[in-house]
Length: 355
Image (cartoon, rainbow, N blue to C red; front, side, top):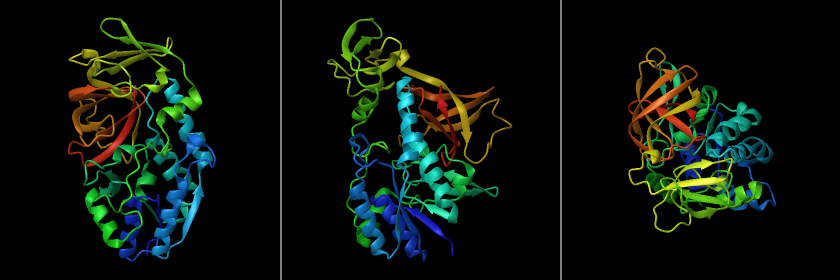
């Protein structure tokens, strides 16, 4: 019988994971990873409610629940990375780094190493091909979370179980309701992983403060408003600009002079692009295209968390990769991860940082 560690968050997805594992005859050891700091307003992660629900779930199945405190590791690795990227005017993805460094990094080194597998409530799958384990996409395209897992390595993916990856979200809810799970009707969390219910701008303000700067219309050079710091804005952003006569999109930022450039986006060429480069490209399992990547490989990809996979071509160019998209892309943001899939969008091959 496999020795399984299951990560429980207090949400419906991870609770259903526990239910399904028990139905299959396993007796997993349950773990709650605590990443919020006690008493720190800007790091509130609604941990009390999460732990309470996780405890009730553990008790229901007669399983042990162990709380693993990784807040210091989280702060040193993920939150510091996010602030550093924001300060440079880039768009970080803390969820990607949390999975790579904390959930399947620090947790594995401290606890997971003693188990055969770690099961989570992520919407993803694993596939066996050519004797190797690959990260596969989920059945539910809206909930698919492979883009958040695209920086994990082979050791991590080969030890992971995703028991709900073959289910639609509504099926997961139905299982939870039938099983009488305490989190069956709990809403999905919306925040970036380290923010919980805390507002993104409040978090950024706590570390980078405020500094008034000009909002300038790209085409005319005319000042049309002010902002409180370029670090509150991301390339492609449409909401929260406080400008009349919209829609307005953030096109670029002048870090030196604290200027945010915007445009209506009506056919503006600078607002859209159909190619971008990726640095430090990371293959999760292997490079399946090494023989043909110079001529270009047919792929699908994502540059943000959306249900759609975009078709394109991947080219190797010395120390970086270039992606040529089949359609115009809005808001290509440096610092974000470009996530690459096979042509059929079945396998997540890896990711690199947009440069």
